[in-house]
Image 1: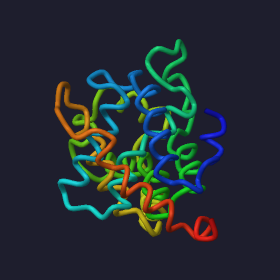
Image 2 (image 1 turned 120 degrees about the vertical axis):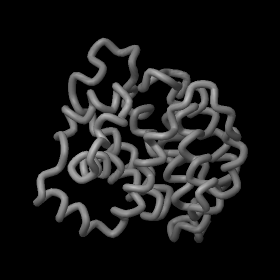
Image 3 (image 1 turned 180 degrees about the vertical axis):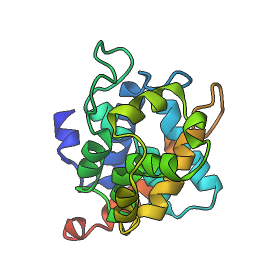
Image 4 (image 1 turned 30 degrees about the vertical axis):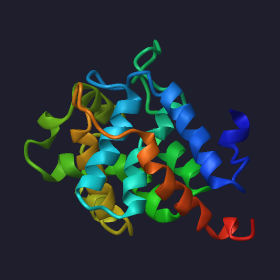
Length: 201
């Protein structure tokens, strides 16, 4: 597993992604939210992005937006769950940036700030959050200040991050049937293969 997370095997993107998805499916049976497993949440978010007509990079960002939770083993089964901010969005984005373009990793990095931005600017948004998201909001800094909002809106991918956050919020429906990981293998492998560091392989 360490070899996979270190990017070994990237000379064969299809095989790499296949192993990555298998790891996510196994690791993602844990729960962060009260309604769905982390695996179900990822697939529901990606499905919503695809159904909305999002570009391939944003669909894959939606699929991987919470991979940081899996990388740091953050879930409800841990005794210290949500006692501190483990910065899953940064952990996930930093790892994704070694494989994918910024159009994938940056919306992931910004999807937690996007929640804080929405909480500051959209009346009633906080009440629409799941209980787990309301709890995590407090350790993530709460609603943004005006200065934080202005700084966030200067980020190149901030609008994509806000859209990703809205899909994130809606991707917590118990029993919703959506396509599995196989539907995302080809676009994911294509994005990896197009990275400059991959072209020489």
